Length: 171
Figure (cartoon, helix red, strand yellow):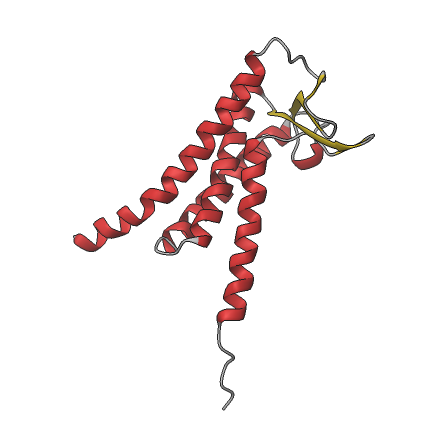
């Protein structure tokens, strides 16, 4: 019984990180949606390279498939839930490590934050807009940032694991 308690205790930070990402993501989106300064598509200049803008993305990254009839809403929500379940299982497997469970938790939190949007608003709420002069990066949100950071950490973890493993001894 103490082994299972230790295993469950080891999951606590990762579950807390998932919840933190979801809560912060939803709070920032609620702020944007409630603010009278934001109407769909209106840019609010913050700096010469950063604006706030209210955008609804019915597709995936870069509005991929956003112009479809609505099936993509269920597809992307289902895909995010399936990937989150898979990553949660990987988090359990790596629960005593630091880097990979952090990466997985960031991705899960971001994915679930966007799934909540799909169910509550029929689209993902985006509001962060970076640009260099007239060249704009597509708008995104805190959940998207967590996913990107999680993927970067996951890649670092994978490259580190590859370089840390000793070469096999051919016989």
